[in-house]
Image (cartoon, rainbow, N blue to C red; front, side):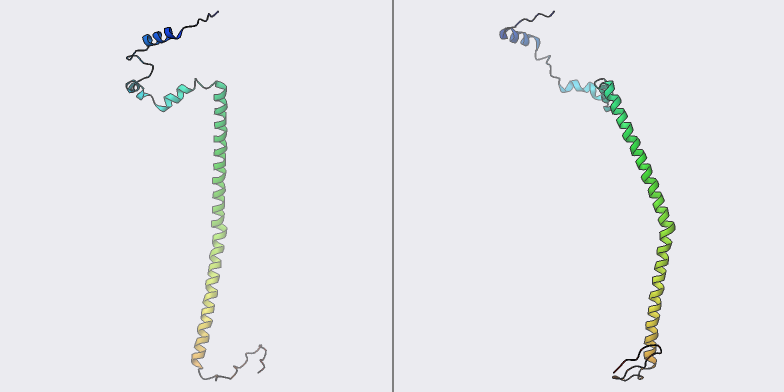
Amino acid sequence: MVKLEEVPIDQFEDNVEDVVSDDESDYSDDEDFDDDEDESVLDRLAALKDIIPLKTRNRISSSVNSVTSWGKTGATFVGKSAWVLTTSMLLLVLPLALEIEKEQALVAYEQEAMQQQGAAQQLMNPGMYQPGQVAPQQPGQPQQKQ
């Protein structure tokens, strides 16, 4: 059994002064840390494993493994999906886009050719139509009333 004894303050202060001197203080100086510089962060983390209980360490380890596994699975899925989408685009959509562009270029070329043909006809027959006269109707078009 433990016996407790009350110590008067005067006696306690005398004992403290005797125990703690200037040469030996509880606080360390900067010089004491020179020996600890060889210790790495990994060494310090390894020393912390004794502080954390085994059950907690196992729970943390399984959680980290689970998150890592889900992350790898998700990254694999995203990578494979991106591969499928890009190859599909290259094989299916790109040729379609190129054909649409060719068709638009052909339509633009035909329109330009028709405009040039119309301009050439006007140059060949400049006096055929006088101002105020109506141009002759093409076959198949309804006649206009004046």
